[in-house]
Length: 409
Ligand code: 2HG
Ligand code: ZN
Image 1 (cartoon, rainbow, N blue to C red):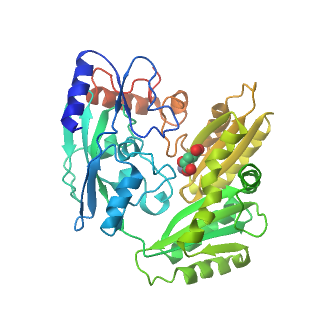
Image 2: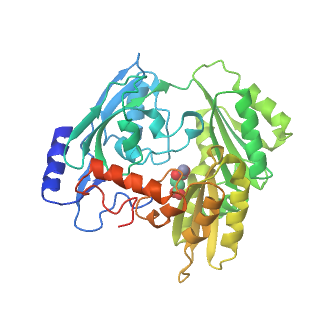
Image 3: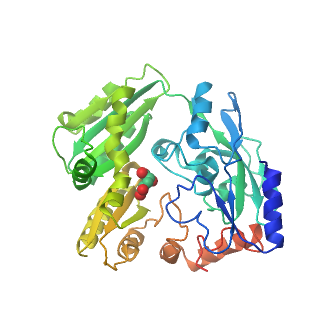
């Protein structure tokens, strides 16, 4: 399948006023890739060609339908890796990850997908093909097309090919889990490690209630010897085999007097066990039943307040169980809530006003999709939403691209 074939399909749909729902790996969590009313679903699955690694420019080009895992394996054959990783790596496609400006587990060090995008090829709503594939590091000639399409959730164009930045493959890695008194201490430890090294790549948090549930529901055991209010997972990664990662971690832990609360892995065989507790967390509310998944961010200093306000507000409503976890180093927490049968509470109406009040976002990384569009006005002014609607008009004059996503009808 080629970009031109996608263009022919979209142009035909445009002519016939038939809407198009682009679909990648279908791992989205906000309904952005789900058809709702007689749309054509345009799967990018067959846009699956991977180009050669450009070792000098440090980029790789590929079709939108390539999965993250496949692309990473291809890059690794030439000694490189993608600076982006997430748990759905085997199914999520890079086109979908561009469309949603995917985040994941390494945003702390490298940023979201938007920061990794060196070029894009896409089909606009009227079938026009646009391409910016030069991969120039410096290019300020006009609007940033790739940046605009990134995070547009299929409402402006179908992404057909991408050019992504690469980083050297990891030569040493240290994964630590540290038991701490709470979010405040976790943020302080992250800040301390960050001043000691640029190798800190992930800073992920789970809390005692989630750890207990993971043990009960899945038999997933903490790598720590005893329970703590929260567990912070830190991963330091270097492209040199000689970086003194263990010494750096030791200095930071000693500063906080928490060296006895930590478990350390420096090899691939125990690393999976260290990540398991964090990686099983998204499944907890699914197992509990009635899962609702919110994904919010606030300024770093406000994360402790976010945690306590959300817990208190959810705790007041009988039948709701909240499981919080996530990318604490980015100020982004996943607020997963199990809603018991028959409970009519709107979890968005409980959580989102708290987030807005703290100056945060109702979507840190999963997008607005259909599920959160009703609350967009909490964090975007009407002038802002109007501007976005005018951009949509310019890219997609007939409004056939993913209607009902981001904006309320
Ligand atoms: C993660 O960080 C993903 O694990 C999924 O963003 C979060 O399922 C979720 O709520
Ligand atoms: Zn996440």
